[in-house]
Image (cartoon, rainbow, N blue to C red):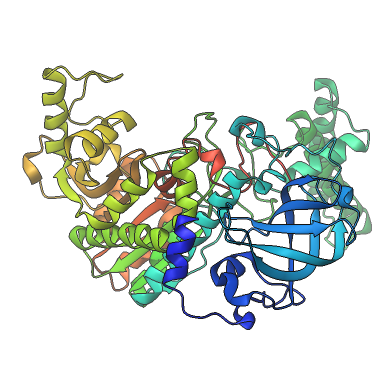
Length: 566
């Protein structure tokens, strides 16, 4: 209520029209009613929402009603003569009611309440089986109820926070004339080169059809007989041609058709023998007859594709779902997540770092402006430092530190007695989350951008630096990671390799197929330019702002190994 009163103090007089939901059949949004308060006292209003709590006595009932527009509830009072009170008080019941705002007696919790004159609609809730009963429910239990957990205060707050950060993302880039690009979800290239990708294929349906049709795996004898039959018919055709048979000869035509049919039957048998999938001579799957004619996957990143637009439209970004088939059950990993990936033409690594810093600060500022009551709920229930941490990031300049210097600082901390789980850090190691958090939380005490990483631990598309950059003992690339308290790595990015020969060599060096990236290398042949970009895992941004520790709790419908819903 303190946040509400602060909001009221800064609000100008609000009309009834401003409170109406634009497409809600004349209902008023609870958020707008709470902001307007007694300015609307006495006016006939319609409200709708779900009962959070209800208590009753023989003559009237108190209801806490919420429509999801804000964390605060609207207190409604219903007299027994207006409606059967027992139908209204069960948590989860959906109500549409008419009435008016009225002042409450001095000293009560809320300064006003909604006096109900008519109950227009009741969506009953089966109280005995409703899993979202009153009382605090654990996050682990709520993960088993993804379709209903949004009814809780926690997930409603997270949903509103996610919405604001999404809006702030588009706002930031649109205000700076970036073009929003929809990159494909299905791809033939692996941006990260890790190979942990979900495959997209229609070939498995054929396997199931074969099983349903009663076809069984052939024996070796059956395969040998089929192969011998093909060879025999081939020899017969050869002999017929040697004897002078012409292409128009009916017997020759019949033999050729028989050979075609026999080869098809042999291919079906060999497919069944290899598990129902066609194979090449080396035993690998042959995708020639698959939907796309080659192996296809769900994208782990839209970066490579959005670069094509960057090299024509200058400043672009993509914001959409990405997928990774990493068989991990940690609180930081999930199989489907959202990525924000801007690309900046004519921008080097320094430009890239400034853009990343500006973006994160913009999101944090907007969150505190738009969702302070939600953040106060988070502070009360989950993370007492959430607001202070978000505010500090919004207002403090980000520190800068080369990877080489970061390793030295970590080594000095270990020598000084600091204990990590991985207590040995050497140049060339990929820093762990504990090291990243130590740098941001304890050493710099603010977000820090670590840059110029070893080439060996970074992706093929990152631009290689000149030898000896930052005094590094080995080759480095113009890469950067934004490290923040609570989470560690929030953003990863780089200046892209714009030199054709260098990019080709790096692709070959990493054991990737050059032909798969020929279109990407074309960007370096036809008007190449310096360009940079970064990727931010959107769920990690939410985790940072809220302090929620499990990524499954900041995305509406989490996809994890062995678990899928809806």
